[in-house]
Structures are given as C-alpha cells and as structure tokens.
Amino acid sequence: MKPIATAAVVLMTALTLTPTVASADSPEETKAPTSGFRAEFLMDMASLEKKVVGLADAVPADKYSWAPTPEVRDVAAVYIHLAQSNHQLLQTLGVEPPAGTADMETAITDKDGVIAALGASFAAVKHAVEGLSDDDLDTMVTLFGREWSKRQVLMLIAGHCHEHLGQSIAYARSVGVVPPWSRPRAD
Image 1 (cartoon, rainbow, N blue to C red):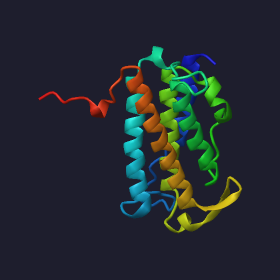
Image 2 (cartoon, rainbow, N blue to C red):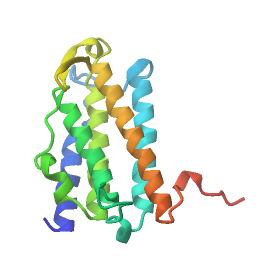
Image 3 (spheres, rainbow, N blue to C red):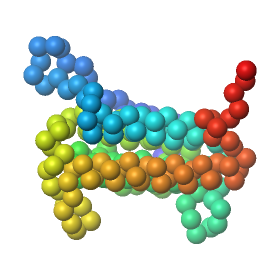
Image 4 (cartoon, rainbow, N blue to C red):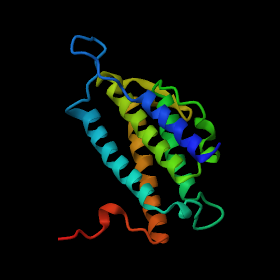
C-alpha cells in the first residue's frame, strides 16, 4: 500500500473510532471518568500518547528504517508494534480491531502512516475505556490462555506502551534525536 493511501486508511479508521458526543438527553452518552482507575489510566495514556507521537514525529523519516541490529525491529516497526498491540489487546475487551491490523507491521513503514496508526490506536484505547464502567473492570476475560480482569488488561496495555516508549527513546537518542520533552527550554 502506498504511504499516502496507508495514512488515509489509518486516519479514516481513527475517525470512525472517535466517539461522537451524544445529546444530554441521550442514555447512550458516555463521559470520560473524572476519578478512579479509569480516569487515572486515561491520564497516563494521554501522557503516553503525547510522548510516543511527539517522539515519532521528531525522528526524521529517513531514520524510520534504522535498527540497532538486524535481528530487532526498526524504528517504524517498534511504533507499529505498539499500535497493533493496542488494537489486539482491546479485542480482549470486546473491541474489534480495524481491518488490516494483523498486517500493520509489514504494511505501514512510512512516517506519516506510522504516526496516523499510533493516533488511531490511542484513540481506540480511550474510546474503549470511556465505554467501560467501574464495575466492568472486575469482569474476567481470557488472554494468553489465562484469566485476567479487564483492569489487568488495561494495565498490560499501559505497561506495554511504557516499555516501547523507553525503547523508542533509546532508538531516538541513538540516531541523534533528543525527545521533545527533554530539550532545553528557551528562556
């Protein structure tokens, strides 16, 4: 798939996953939680999204094929793995991934497509969490052949994102990119 077409497909997927605001009279209206685990989780994910997407944007496009060794994922593949995993882990919570999710690591390698895929995956996580109630968090689901609470699945998503943010920071610094939030501020 061509980079522009890939970015367009991912962007359209993100737009379809973005929740619409229902009228105040609508019983289906979902609101972002303001306290408790879900609110704290969403705050962490918002911070992660800002850092991951900001770092992905800061890395030059010609460095997206860089990897420290041939045996490990390159820059683009790390970001796409993170996006793909967000969608796949959400399946455990009953959220169907967008078409093409299984092939993301080979289909999306350009910077614009990667950034769009990351944004779509974070939007999907946010939408899924906003659709859960606090009681839903204790519901048990099967993942990797064992029982997990939905809360544990969300913790896995956050932990996985943090893991690959750290990896991405090391990759970025290896190609001469300072993370945007670590740059000196002009006085």
